Image 1 (cartoon, rainbow, N blue to C red):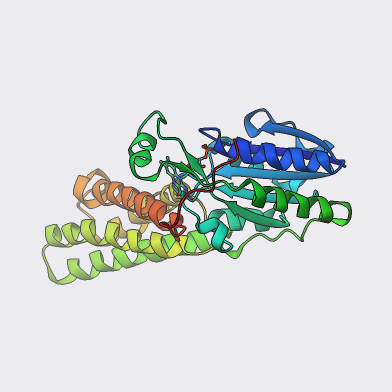
Image 2 (cartoon, protein in one colour; image 1 turned 180 degrees about the vertical axis):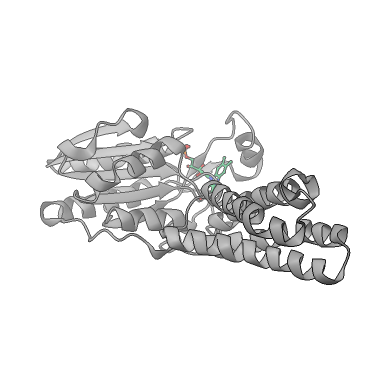
Length: 305
Ligand SMILES: Cc1cc2nc3c(=O)[nH]c(=O)nc-3n(C[C@H](O)[C@H](O)[C@H](O)COP(=O)(O)O)c2cc1C
């Protein structure tokens, strides 16, 4: 069978894992094309695909994420397996580690047949921040060639009869859910403004709104990201802040301040929107990284290549 093995890697460790997978599948009689995702051909001319990515802050490198996103409809019709390389300890060998939430959602969307987590590698002389800083504490090669080969052999066993799973769009990806959260976030802040304006000076109500809105949106971002398939924090921030800005101008400004130009008000509109954007993006990014794989543990296994 024709198999594409493709990967996203920054420092070569994941490429080494992919090479072992490719070698094993070739030894089992398959015709394998192994190439980095930045140069990978469309998956359409293959009978099966194996895609892997190095984890950085629990995300794969952009080019491999984009490859899977771009070809998602095609991949959902081809048996596809995923793997990640990351933990700089022996945790990946001790027990099966779940993929990050975003990858679980992406895997469900393409009907992936499985995901495997392998230990990673960080060289002591790696260049660039923050890798070099991290290498001071965590340098080592935790890839386990025997386990990688065993996994690839399982794939080779399964390949002849493999069919993709039914692709599922995770509930968390729903556009309605995104808008619902945005409206709830805006509604709470708007209510605080309108109620406060009813009994307190307008300046106080506007200042309260400038504090409440970012805090409320930030807490919603954490909750929103806690589900598979949630939109990226950046897209979430744009959607919510855009929605809140339009609703504020259309509905709140005429009620609270008929003679006061909310649209021209820095503290009334632009500051809370800007802080909300930063809060949703930052808190959402942190929440999307959870749960982090456990760390600590014994000596490295000696590495792939
Ligand atoms: C800045 C930085 C962040 C990392 N973040 C994670 C992480 O979130 N989860 C994880 O399991 N490993 C993490 N790692 C470990 C890498 O995934 C590991 O070194 C991997 O083998 C690198 O693959 P590559 O050589 O193909 O780029 C991180 C490493 C660095 C340098």
